[in-house]
Figure (tube, rainbow, N blue to C red):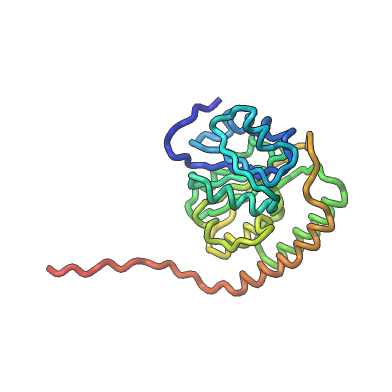
Length: 248
């Protein structure tokens, strides 16, 4: 297991979780067992769970894991935002709490951010999924519509595995479900997007929190809103401070 350090972590791993008591502890142990080479912290955001998710983490006595809790569910985007606001790291990594995201890809997600200061977001791109036929079909149609409308050059924005810089995240517009539009929103702020292929795992406990109809009903208005935001973004020149004149 990776040794913990007392210095400020470079990476904050944020895990939004709702009713994932059956999967969360195993996931945490996988991450703690050397998935990340840099100094890191883990923040679990229990988004209004009713199955004792937060209590399961505490009962496991994982002293190096921070736990935040929403009294009522606010959704995945709000859970991620709560984690980012509490984070101490410069780099944020998101991992879904259901165990389907494989921590072996975390190092690969972080690498483009360390290699290129112009990259603001690294999005995992699933090459294999364990969802049902209808959910995969609807997701494929929605992704195609989004790429056409927003030109975000990202095939799969719903993958829970992402890495991003904390500072630009705090500048992008927040709204419920904005996690589905991170590539377009980061590009709006002038950042480059990188992609890393990943493979999801089967869910071993709990149930999916997303249905087919609710994704479609919420997704289209949000997509049009992000399209409007991108159209309304003016040129973003870099402000350079002019040094004071010094009398000789």
